[in-house]
Picture (cartoon, rainbow, N blue to C red):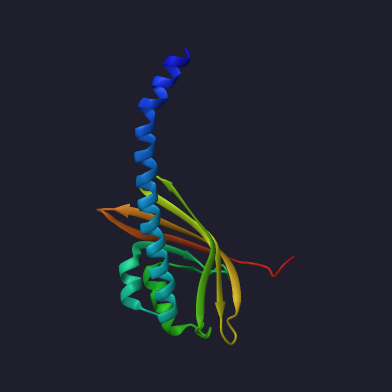
Length: 145
C-alpha cells in the first residue's frame, strides 16, 4: 500500500510542479500589469488605461460611484478630486481561477487633499492571450481602529 501511494505521488508531482510554475509565471505577469496600472493612475496615462482596461470594465469607487471604461477614463479629466502625488500598493495577493486572476491589496495615495488608504480588489481576465482588468472595487480603509 505504501509503495502504491509513493508511486502515485511520484507520478503526480511533476504535474503539480508544472501547475505551480505556470501560476508563478502568471503571478509575475499580473504583478507587472498591476504596476503598470498603478503608474498609469499616477501619470493619468489614458493610452495605458485603454490598453489595460477591458471594454466591459466595471469600476466601483470608494464613494460607491459606478463607472464603465469610458466613464472611468472621462472622470480622470473632470474629477474635482486633486491628483495624487504617489500611488502605492502593499499587502498584494494574487489568486488564480482558470483564466481569471483576483488581486487584493491595500492602496495608498499621498498629496494635498488626497491622502487616503483603500482596500482594493482587481479582477483580471485572460482573453485571446491578453490579460485585461475587468473589474475594480475600492473600499476606504479606516485608520488604525
